[in-house]
Length: 399
Image (cartoon, rainbow, N blue to C red):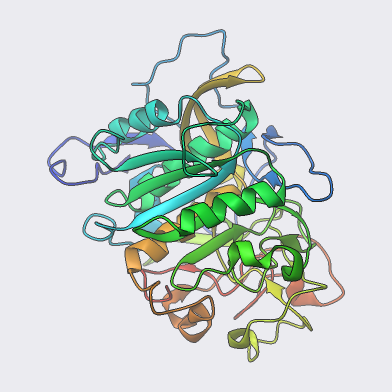
C-alpha cells in the first residue's frame, strides 16, 4: 500500500508529498502481521551491561555492496504517518527544547545521516553549524568512543525518530564509552546537565536491576526520562523498571477505516513485567497492575518491525547500509520522549502524569506478548496492561 506522506516543517507545506511504502498489513486492527525476516542490532548483554533494542528488517534493506541512493523512496513509516497516527502538533511545537539521545559507542556518520533523513522528508536542517544538533562523549567532550555498527544503527534510529516527531526540537547525542550501566548512566547524567534538555531517551535495557545501584543516573526531576521496555515479551528490564523513568512498550500500528484512521494492537515482542526491586509508581495504584512493585510499561508507541519506521544509516553493519526499516521498543522510546518535548510540561510533572491523564491516550485493548500468571501482564485490555501500558499518544495531553 502507498500512503501519501505530507512534507513537514516550516516553509515546506507547499512542496509535493513524498509517497511512503508502508510495510506490514494495512486496514483493520484485527489483521495479523506476517512473520518478517529480522535481526537484532545488538547482542544479548551480560550482567551490568545493556543491549540496544533496535530490530532491523533484513528483507527490505540495501546491501552494502550496492550503491546507496539517498533520494530513493524509503519503505516504512515516515514523519507524517507518525504525526497523524498520534495526533501530534509537530509543525508548531517544540522550538527551544532539546531531546537528548543516550547510546553506547560511536556513530561516526550520525550527523550526515540525520541530514539525509531530514532532507528526504522535507524537515528543516538540524546541524552542528546551525546549533540544532550536538554530539558529545559521556564527559561532554569530543573524545568519542570506538565505532560500533550495531549501536550506530540504534543511534540513527533514535535521531530519526526525534526528527519525525519533534522536527523543531534540538537534538543532543551523548555517546557512552561502553554499554555498561555505569557508562550509560554517566552519559544520562551528562545529558541532564545540559541546558535546554527536557527529555532523555534510552533505547536500551538489561536485566531487572535495583534503583539502589543505578537509580541516581535516571532520577532527574524536571526532565522526562524514557526507556524501552524490551523486545522479548514478558520479563522486567532495566532501566524501564526504574521508579524514575517512563517505561515505553510497543504496538503494531496499521491504517484503519475508522475516525482515527489508525488501529493498534499489542506487539508480541513488547517487554512487560514487574520489577523485583523498585517501588511502584503512586499514580499506578488504582489501575490494577497486579504488581507488588514497579510495573512496566507505562505508555507505548509503534514497535513491531512488520509495521516499522524508515531510517537512514550509512555506517555499514553486517552487510546492510542506507535506507532501512526498523522496529523494536527502540522506536517507541524516542517517540515518547519527543512527545514529552512537544508538550513542554516536563519542568512541572513527573512520570505519574500519564496515569492522571489516561483519557488523553489511545487505549490499546487487543493483542498479547505471551502468557503470564496474571493476564494483564501480557495481554492488552481496557485500561492498563503490561505490553502497552496506558496506551499511545492522542495528542500531548497525557504528557
